Image 1 (tube, helix red, strand yellow):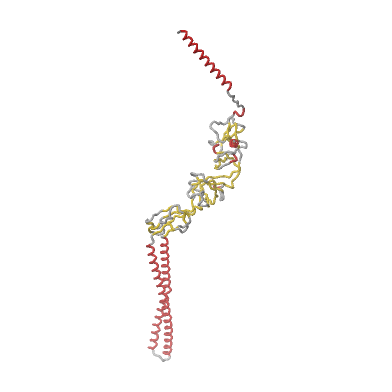
Image 2 (cartoon, helix red, strand yellow):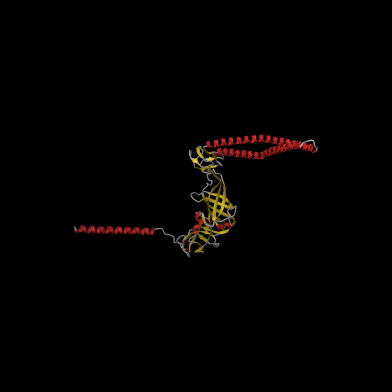
Length: 432
């Protein structure tokens, strides 16, 4: 029993030694066959940073402003009479295209028809009175002429009697009778002339009455026409504000029609831009909200006054477009406009916006990182492929750089001023 125990113990020790030897051999074999890493020495041991070469580029001054597009041709259609809506055509739906003169709604015109009948009857009466006055005038003129002739005869008779009396051939009684007749005839002539002379004034009053009644007829016809409200312009129906059976008062808006073929965009720019923004400058527009649509236009007009509250100026951009084009600018869209001043183009230092941290950029001079403070003149939102980076946000510096500087595109938190680094040009990274 003791012998078996001893043999078992020795066997275990031998197996353990063999296994340990095999393990040591495997470790030695792995160590001897491991790949040898190349030891990097010199410049390649330095941390690599992506850079762009600093060079001034010709750049127009750009100013960013914001505004909302407004249709220059639009109509808030009101009612011009008070009545009840009796008809709303099937074409009167928001979003429908209308031509000038198309019916929008129809109002109850029964009252206005009666007003037209009364006005026409009143006009006919005034015209009849004018015709009757013409007849009376002719008769009055004839009576005045006859009375004048009668007066002349009476005067002649009086003179003849007076001469006979002077010669003793007539009596005083005959003279008095002739004079009395002359006085009566003269009075009648005066009355007839007065009656005839009144007719021009009466005619003027009659003509005024006819003109006034004619105006009333035209007004009644116009009110009758206003019961059918039609589109004053070509455009698209934005909204309809009434329903059948609704009573509307004079002046109430019943619909809005918009023609988006010509738009006006008032862009608010900083007041200091007035010194270099001019009519005709190119404007790049894009939606300030969701979407990446872009449009190009030019400055059409410039407002003369600045807004003292917001310290801004307003430039107007007019856009003429096909309103049915899917890429047209919709009225009411809030847009961002970038004005390019064509008379202020010169060489400027431009860097990616992301390269600026806390108003400083990092440049490489003789493989040494240097942090320099910079001041931004204005920003640019555009692709500048000459720098070899796909950025769209750029900063134009007031602070001049030095030719030969290399600007770190994206300075990380591990980079420190004074470090030695290895530069990699951005266009080389893009080509790889």
